[in-house]
Image (cartoon, rainbow, N blue to C red; front, side):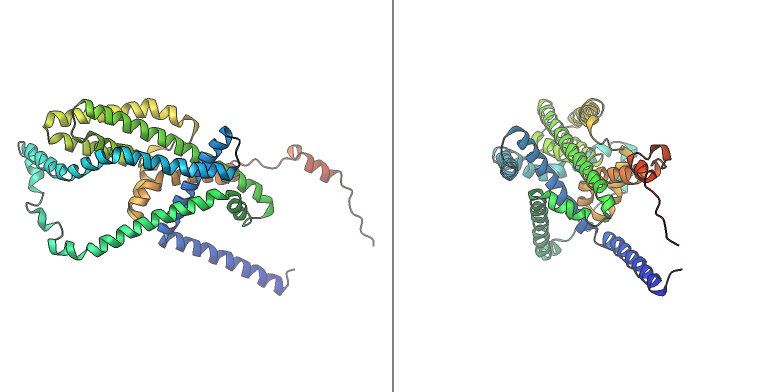
Length: 367
């Protein structure tokens, strides 16, 4: 029979655990942006650790030196790319700001020639300036835009610095995290964390290859068909591939709108070319790339993107795919394998521990 002290202790522990769980759900619900920033830092750390591991396999150098080379290689590559292609891309992006409104005007002219198109145009406000903010309000929002830009830059710096700290000594954080669990579970938790790291690393490699193939093929194809601002549209297609499902569709819309500035025929060619790129990528490139990593179910990924996009906007869309990769590993390992499909303990399969217990002599009690 339990005494009052033991009963009160168990009630206090249960109340504390319940309070911690409720606090975690509250923090996750109301401060999701913070957790997404932390996860983005983890993703950056996975990238730097992956490059470091590759360098350690190729070069007989300490890990610290390889990590430094990984950071220099990463930021050096970005600087070199910006140095060589920024003038061309920058000029085309500036020109795109004027081309997109012209494309909408051309689309309106094309739709007005058909009865169904005219019905669509009738539902669009004639004076779009009434929908857009007034000129005076734009000037009053300059400080807000400036503060938003600073906030985005601060978030990027936080993510990069967090990633560097995590990549510098990953064991410090992983082992520290496992100490939150009972000793008998720590080895299993470390194994699950290692599997999350492997899957995220493979997903990042596959995504980089996927983005590069799409961007290069789109740039060559759009240039061959004579699409204006071909490199700028290819850059949108490159980054759009990171936001799977949604990003490629937006890049295709931009390509069609740019083509409309030169006529419906070029817009049709741009649409056919981009659809061909996506078909070849979906049925040839993607299966080859993702055959050794997590292949996300398209419908599940789309629902997850919509959910995070509604709650957290663009950062939710960007991090939806890698976050889903991690969640799939956690659910499969900790819930499916360790709970649902765990084999019941059989006396014939208990192994050395069962034999040791069976051979133990019973303890005799005097009296």
